[in-house]
Image 1 (cartoon, rainbow, N blue to C red):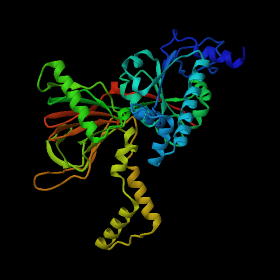
Image 2: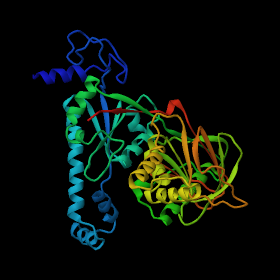
Image 3: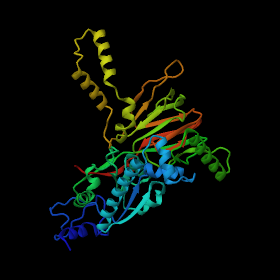
Image 4: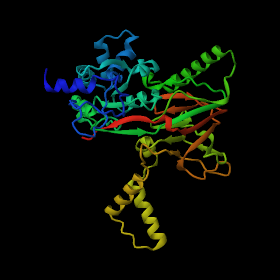
Length: 425
């Protein structure tokens, strides 16, 4: 047996003697896993679930399988759409090879592994695992995080196609192909925990249906999305025997949002009508392109792109300021870039920040609809729907019906934090 094998057995073999995650215990003097007198807590799971994304190749195969298309027919169909069959297959193989690399690395350390497709990922898988690895990109990581309700269960993201995916929520891309090195660092405690705050959702009112529609797997069109919500609502009514479901008390949804919540009409060209209350303040009527509420993690994502300024806008504002004030403002490229960067960076805040950040997209302001603030921080946001065909979308992947009479209360709780790891390059 090699020295490394001995080290790995010591590091990963004794779950019963510790609580595994973040819990230090004094090791035997003969331990090779931690040589210092003040060892860091290692990351030593016994059972790991690896949740994998659905590649575009797999999606296209599943999509047209019901039509009885052969592989050759699929090639021709993709070519007609301007997509490359060989390109999709190549990306699929890169993803699957990297998943195999992760799984083999874990099993070499004596860890029990269960590989789960994202469509098969559920609460039972979460209960079974000591830790969960998201094998895909940020979308897969968001799905995995949404079902982990305990803050004591670590979630690690691995980007399985780093050439095509940014993977902000995943480990640095070098560990995709060097996953054993990442495992060694986790074993030795050479990492830090990052507790990401998440959003919890309460629904109440009339016409409520807490059954979600998965947008990622089904890739629904607008008509299919509306139909899916009608089906889930009808099924819910048949189960309860009521014509319209109603919750007189707030119902906590069994999902947590790591990035953002978006509320708005399903048809993007239609204005969204709702009322909003920030931190139990007065209700304001709003008409806009929708409402986004994000965490610190999500402040780098959609919320950032909703609110960021372009250099062109900053330059035009500085020109107006110069003409209105008579100040000698040097309108050079360096100043414009600095002002633009400073403003845009102010939109980003820490993933462990306990505040929400709300953004009202393109608000309509007139004598009926007010807008005291278009964006800002809050501890709690309440929204009452006055929409006709709206949805509340969690992290871009899970949709809840949110029509006239529905009320959502959006907040954070310490118990909803997500435990993730940070490995430096």
